[in-house]
Length: 257
Image 1 (cartoon, rainbow, N blue to C red):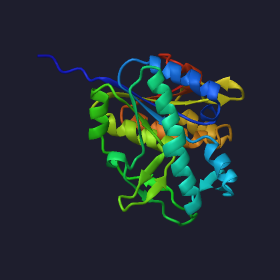
Image 2 (cartoon, one colour; image 1 turned 120 degrees about the horizontal axis):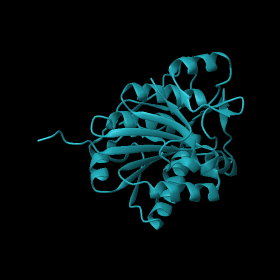
Image 3 (tube, helix red, strand yellow; image 1 turned 90 degrees about the vertical axis):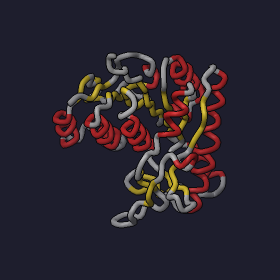
Image 4 (spheres, rainbow, N blue to C red; image 1 turned 120 degrees about the vertical axis):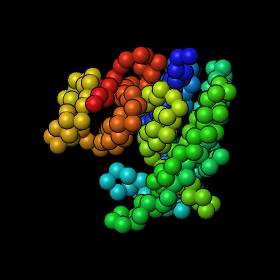
């Protein structure tokens, strides 16, 4: 008997302005629905939480472009990420013939996390992923169900935590890479990682460090690449691409060893 062939799995993270734009989101979900085989969608929150927070008189507090999650903000984030955005995506996918289930990290205890150390900066109720329990995710995938994960985790003591969606995607894909041939796609508005307006099609760690030191790669792209390279080490295929290219075989910036 030959060795059993591993099924391939795509973990796709959608974020940024795509979540805020109904038309872009619809077009992305249509392409996502066309992808064959097991897949998981992880979504960010866009600026929805900030807008709804403002309506409720809760101002977004930022340090170095990162959100501080105080108790009031956590309530808004839980409602918007775990409720409004997650269920909107799930219902749109159902209309496209995809049997999706919306989850946070607290559901089925999929993603336990610990509250981030308040030193040197207190980010409030922000969670760092401790582990990913894959049994339920695998069961869903084997049944043809598509999990849609919101960027929320829990501390197993009854406390919800705000967790970066890029981190959730890379943690989930790494945890499932023992059972599947895995691929991680970070999708957003840009064609991929850019260098002075030109797309970098292939990127290794050396080039990344060079461009980061030169101030060409900055801000939100840094965590994406750090997480991408750490997933690559675990045997995951990784690319960063436009939301419009989600269903293409090759596009955007491919990370290589």
